[in-house]
Image (cartoon, rainbow, N blue to C red; front, top):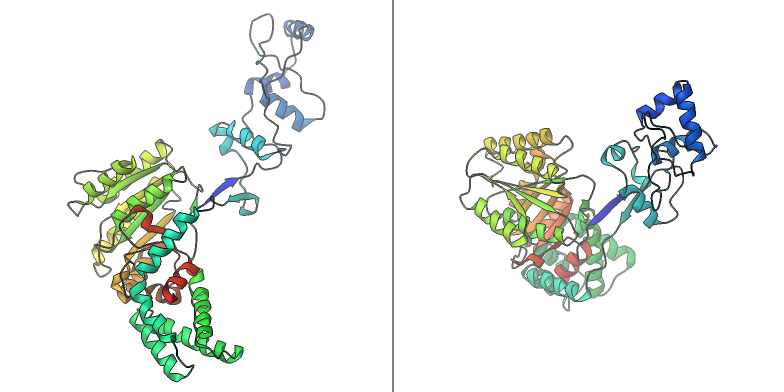
Length: 435
């Protein structure tokens, strides 16, 4: 049920700049002595053996003649030769005949050789979507989403029951959208678009108007629908921020569990050093998911997260998530501390953080929009997690965000269970709102 996408690099055409044997290069440039010529003659009489992979690659890229064993500068009477591998790796100058052979080739590379691989752009990368979700689990999620948004949808769906398409219908619809905290901007945009659609398509039935509103709502929310890209960095550093009580720590615990379903190793950093129970709460989630938590009883939040990034890099962790203390956008000194945390993460890993997520409580309505604007201005948000949509009458806040600050909504939450945090889908959300 998760909409993550993994990214795998395809092997580039042409030879890689792999490390070469310096002693072999020296022998190529020097004249051979009589003793060395004699050792070469003895080696030629012996049965031919497979040359080393590095020498073979160099020879193939330099000239079409077959590569010959390169004598090593050893005092032994015969030159040592590398044992023939069971299945030699295909040279990079040839394309892999299958995905399996390509995978084996790249996995056989050492870390130093991988770092020398030529940079590739997005066009040369393969995007592999996740497996299809289980139908029963999908149906259960949609049911919980509809139930969670029932208070918001009840004001909207009741308008179209036996209604006539007149000015009264538009006024009732305007009131319902404003009560759902869709905001003035999004409400006016939807109503104007709906009026135009009704006129151009000559809609005469209330059910048709409802379907038209659904399509317009999906089009409005579609820019927020974006998948979290995994595998583009190791570790993928995610910084989680939000106001007090929005559900940051709980969302981190749920997200860690979902990442494990995609075979991602996870490390958590307890960067909330202000709230007394924050560290203990994150530790409980770590024990529940069998995930390591980097924490300190006291100290600077930036220092804790800095250490966590270093630990994640040393342990080859796939994803590192950093919790931060809750704060209001009006607390300027605390917002400056968040900027400091971001700068420190960049010092620990130059291109990090790769994701800066804001957790917002749907029940706060238009105040959530103000939070999005303030945190985005301070940190440069890459995504949102909208929590506590279950039982709220203010589910329209996502429409307001889409209209005024369209930052991707990665996940929405409709409950306390792990499976109640799922990726945002514009179509599913519109269906839940309009029944």
